[in-house]
Image 1 (cartoon, rainbow, N blue to C red):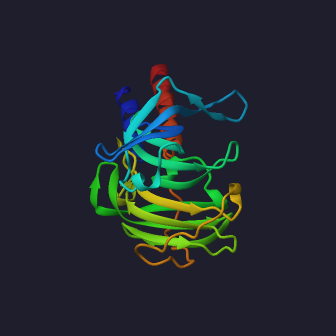
Image 2: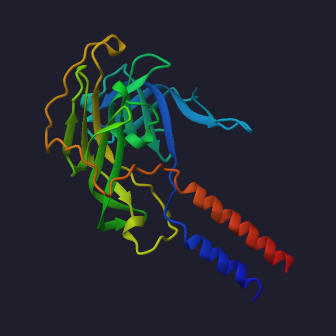
Image 3: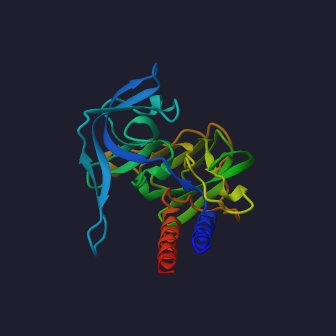
Length: 287
């Protein structure tokens, strides 16, 4: 009986943990080498992999390190990528499940190191840890369709998109799939357009209780285009194109709006569960 108690406690610990992401995301930098509409792929040349080291008692040191591979190829998040990116352009891209194979995000870099920013994104912006040009930023939260769930993810029926100018919220509201919003309220020629193509949301909010479930993390597809301010990086600005669909969002913040959780948001809870397991096993051995 004394061995049954630790097992029961372990099950209890696991049951209170929410769904956790299980598929590796790899971010690389490089230059576009080839675009193949026939194969639905973009190839990146001279890739460098993003990683961090954690010195004892210090802050993490993150950088891009050259890889042995000369080329990495992967399918695009959306076919619009073929009209956004061109050979020779510097990009950052994130793949799911390993290096290359399937790009879930591709972002175009602007400027020179160490002040590079992003002007265009096709895919999930939450996977790219680089700032947008013009001091713009986004907060994204997909809303699940609880009638269309499978395992850890649900189809997103809409996405709340909040646009920030510096630290100031300038636009916020919901976009249904294929709807867009544009903000160009500054007098420096800059602007930003965001289109929500499709997406997924975590199934946790659709459950009556949080249940430990390991599986794919939710991934969404957006198209983001930023026009830098006039003279920013030595180039003239161009006004964003008119919104192709949907209506520009009002400057309001819905009550349920919230920033998109990071992909590693479940790790602290998982660590707590592991520590609890160790403690329980230790107590059972003393008995």
